[in-house]
Length: 101
Image (spheres, rainbow, N blue to C red):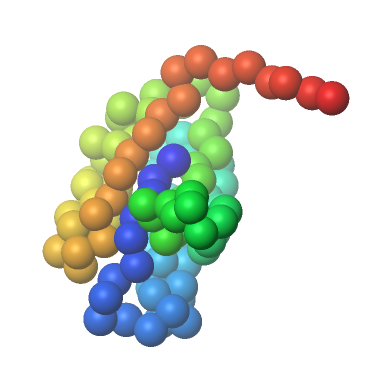
């Protein structure tokens, strides 16, 4: 998962188009199956989020997240996000469980 802030110098539609274009570049990285770009909203006034966009990468079975992050394409994307002031933050699930009703 990659979360980022909205770039202060782009309109929402321009930011969306730029992120979608860059997300399609991630598909070319070995081990990346899909990329989903989502615009985030606050869950409520008291619970304002720290990020505006979420990029979810679905990886092939057995793919190593570390090698994907170290791939040149991902390194360039993270650098661009930093230069644009978007404060990229990466997270990799290490353990998961599901609660169902």
